[in-house]
Image 1 (cartoon, rainbow, N blue to C red):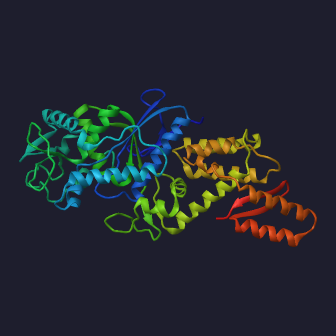
Image 2: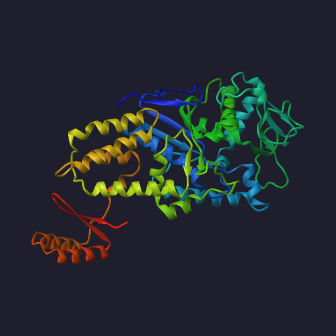
Image 3: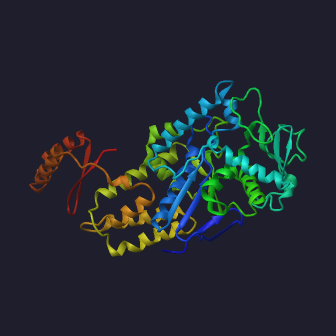
Length: 447
């Protein structure tokens, strides 16, 4: 296989990927904050990193994929509106699992809950306090940003121009407005809290991911992923916490997927109310179209979402199904092998799925032009990495329709075209179309 290269956000370059432990890859991806059903934009990192895992496993690596669930967060308290934030988080976590199960890409190897990882967070905060990287103020604990010489390197931002996005919360307690919360003292209207040496309360968002990632993958694991919207402040703060507490970088590579935008270019988000829940998109278009839609754009680039892009993906799914029906089991032609190689070389070059798909479409066109049977092995392998191997699992036409098609072929051979047209109409009434080829007839389901 070609040398594996990935873009690293911190160095802003595509560079060779060398895992910490030969043959093994650890990936941590920031998962959802479970205050509502996830939307189609939330599904992009789930799909991207699930497919990346498939590709790395195809390349011979053993992969451990960790995707956390943030079930302790300000947004959850706000969404509960005085009700139980715990029950809301539990309900939305179950919905998240159910919705992403419908993508049929498998579950991550670990899906830690923030609420089940508090001890690790308390331990890391204690280390930061003991090292002078944090301080207690009014029951809160804040991280001293300016104590970290590397702060801003990941996001490429100037420290003096940053805003943690915490609004006025804790502003009177902070030594510096740039400092961010590691721990928040318990408030009367919050229904969950944990004990800590500095007082009862709950963790801040950023320390949650540092602690969960370190607990499952150790410090210096291979790939930290997530949406580009998390780069600052979330990922910058994660990196700073671990660097300050452990004296080493949290991850070797940082990978960020681009965001979804409406077809008119406007950002899509829950707050703007212009984005569809994942389950609704799956109900309308099916999981195959969703996966092909995401694979059609490079993971680092923004991707337009709307009826036209998803319809184009659905049409692509049908083209692949049609191509798969024409293939036979067995080895693929050697003449098409360079396109198979090109497919995997594209994935090895910063997981370039659009270039890989271009190679796959060229393979399909080449297979369609060949006379005689074409083996399916190459296409099965390519679709397997994309999570679309199920497109081969299409039931054949009913025996009754096959009999009609045979009778039509005989009628055509006898120049009885009126009878052939009658039989075609009966076949189409049964939900299938018939196409004549140099090697005989071909039946395909009507869309």
